[in-house]
Length: 117
Image 1 (tube, one colour):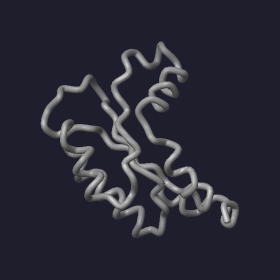
Image 2 (tube, helix red, strand yellow):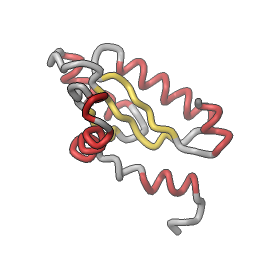
Image 3 (tube, rainbow, N blue to C red):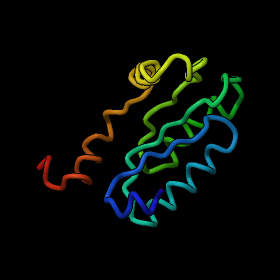
């Protein structure tokens, strides 16, 4: 996927699970993307299951915000039965929990250079 984004000149969005391993996963992914020359628009953490409230889930967002160059756009919570609820529930959750508009200028500059100047 990274090479496709590179070939198409598109920025990337890194997603990672909120729990244990998120710091390693996210730092390695961001490093690899930047080494390839990709623009990293942001990072989104997600809960692949009900949050347990463990130390990793509580501290990973703050640690990643301090260590990563890309902005942490937020944490998407577990959505019960997402397949049955449909895409509108996911869109609503994104509006409530993510600062998804923050990387928009970065993305536009990559896709359409000079557009915002």
